[in-house]
Image (cartoon, rainbow, N blue to C red; front, top):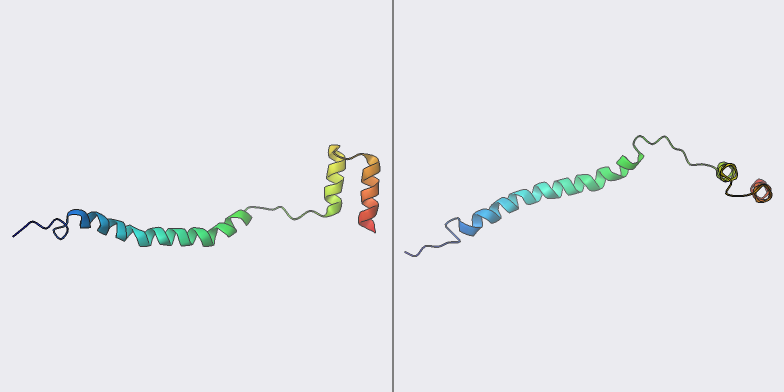
Length: 78
């Protein structure tokens, strides 16, 4: 009888271990996809800022001058 490498556990043993890990890898991937959106919001106390708050911040940082600040503030109030 000839030695049958494939059916005697040669290369097939390696693939068997790989196929056992495949469902575990798929489970981890699915959990990651579903949990990831919640991770970005966890621990975040930031609320969305109003346009007026953004404008005030830009003025206080010196990004815009007083004239532009007044013009944009009036536009926001309209």
